[in-house]
Length: 449
Ligand code: FUB
Image 1 (cartoon, helix red, strand yellow):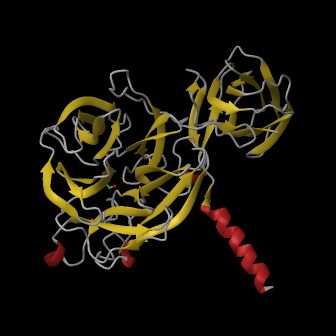
Image 2 (image 1 turned 45 degrees about the vertical axis):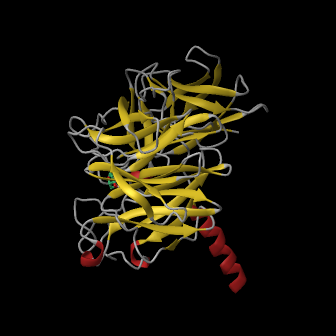
Image 3 (image 1 turned 135 degrees about the vertical axis):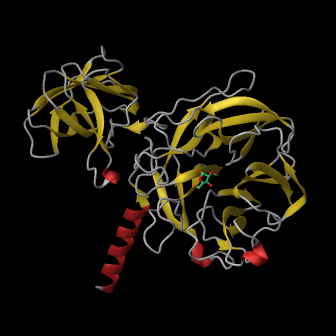
């Protein structure tokens, strides 16, 4: 009995740790997440974000950032993300003020088989460690931990948003921000600064800069950072020939959020020949921008090495398997009329979104679905409608073949409706769902068997 219940507990725990999310944006769907630092370790992408929670009486500062711990996540296919649970928490680090709720933007890197996790936060002893933020390190043998925090923060840093980089010659660098962006060499132990701290004075002098993220591509060093050029942060970059600059301002990577999320914070990686930008937006919390969620989109470079400006998408990255629940509300394109997206439950936004189709020929398009090679026979639509409705499912384009026609009767809330596949097309296809008549149908997800 004891064994059976412990087995059940393990199964439940594993189920909990598998973040039910897919690679549509936001990619982390079981909690708020921000300031994503993505890293390729082995054949997986690991993600080390901040973990926003909501402040309450006696817990953080109301209406401000509130963060008590960090989770690590990973994915082998950029589609399914595993939540490895808490890796560092404020009351288990000896020098951290245990009720500061200030575990801000972290970073992580591997060196000689050890993983070094850098995090900025407030110390309890302001005389010894200074007021405001400083940066600590926790070390692990595996990227998902367990991480052992060092007993003291790194000496010589007052600031936030640590970013770590190891150059091709093995020299490691640490960057951080405190109004300006600063950088210094790290000693081989990865735990101490080595030599003088350089101020990146060549970056914009007006408007807040923070969240430095340095990477190298084809001999160009890219210093990237959020900067308030106008009202809120936009992602910008500067380029140079050396990890500590000097850098030349090169342009914007992503414009300010059109919906006013004040912060943005990012990282850039190459995984299996494709470059990706990880960043954040307040998708699950449209009215409060201190509760953010990690997103990812593909990033492209021009032949001269400049970064092509990226327009954020909901579709995100990765190939979605047709047999999974495809959340078409994370669309690639929507018809101009009769199509909109709403939360399924405004009281529990983590339940996600639904697509509302309400005019004849209204449609939603979701790109890059892998239908595989073997003929799929059935389409499942999780839909809700008080009028009933007929949906046509196309692949390729809106004028592409009708994959299936789904007649949905009036439903009592969301119901899964099945219909046969008419014309199966194998391989990776765009998926389009079109409403045929003047009815109103809400779609949660579609899936194929
Ligand atoms: O997440 C808290 C702070 O907001 C980060 O440290 C900044 O980069 C900004 O994203």
